[in-house]
Amino acid sequence: MAEASYKVETQGDVLRLRAEGDWSVTHILGLDAELRRLGTEGEPAREAVFDMAGVTRLDTAGAWVLDRTAVALEARGAKARYDGLREEHRILLDKIGDLEHERGPRPKRPRTAIEVVERIGAGVRAMWDQAVVGVAFLGEVMRTLGAAINKPRRLRLIPLIHHMEKAGFDALPLVCLLTFLIGAVIAQQGASQLQKFGAEAFTVNLIAIIFLREVGLLLTAIIVAGRSGSAFTAEIGSMKMREEIDAMRTLGLDPMEMLVLPRVLALIFVLPLLTFVADIMGLIGGGVVALTQLNMAPMVYIERLRSAADFWTFGVGLLKAPFMALAIGLIGCRSGLDVTGSAESVGSQTTRSVVRSIFLVIILDAVFAMFFSAVGI
Image 1 (cartoon, one colour):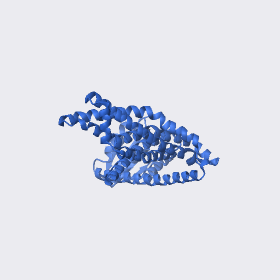
Image 2 (cartoon, rainbow, N blue to C red; image 1 turned 60 degrees about the vertical axis):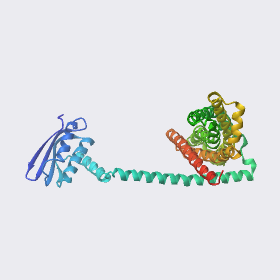
Image 3 (cartoon, rainbow, N blue to C red; image 1 turned 30 degrees about the vertical axis):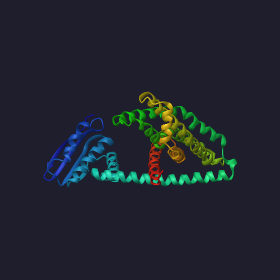
């Protein structure tokens, strides 16, 4: 079977393309670039005739190349038509032409600046939509909590204690280690800088204020978001993927009451306790550095802590903890319920859960910091 070939003849303002041979995908690769130039170079013709009498075979790739060439010639003002077509070739070319017509011209790509603005707008709108969904989900949780308070038997204590153990007590070793190290690092860096001004004694004030008000809670909340919030999303998402939640609804069980409320309450209960432990470990880490680098006696360190930090310095972090726990629990459980029927969805929702939780935790911390500063605490 002869390979695909063509000849171009020009008679006045009529361009005639004589196609011959096997116009299939295995034989037209060498003609593709030539036909692209044919549609864009040379003098424009009034009419373009494709003589198909010599074509022995035509598949979808060959038909698409011919149709693309015809469209390019028509864009330059030529009227394209086919001569000598077999019936099966005509059907194939008509189908390719219909598909191209349905697809339409490619939209012009917007300029970079406009595209950036569009993406920013889409991101802001997505954040607003997520905020609306989050508020609605918070309302559902509050309604379920109110029903549980009205009828205490509906509160599932065993799952609540189980999730308190998983989200809180199992996280203690990690929280203790990281906060101890961070406290030591803050003390070491603070002492190194304050020694230049002969004010190394104020290292204790630095540790107390930074760790008790901000770093202890913030670091603990980020650990819980990455550890427990992601676990909530993966657990509920796997149940959603296996249609276990649909089965619960079929049995008359409320997923909010069975799955969401115990997890959210567990975080609200354990995050203040974890924050308390994190504060103590951070102060101990700072005390070790003060003892080794500043030669400060333990009793002197404790006395300086008492003078540097009052009740509200310690209480501010504990007061913010339940709100951050609520945010982490809501985002983790809601992301799990948003999972669709694929394993990829579980992974993507888990990632989004962690990112959103950490983002919201930092936002809440900033809002509380401005509020307490405004009221003089």
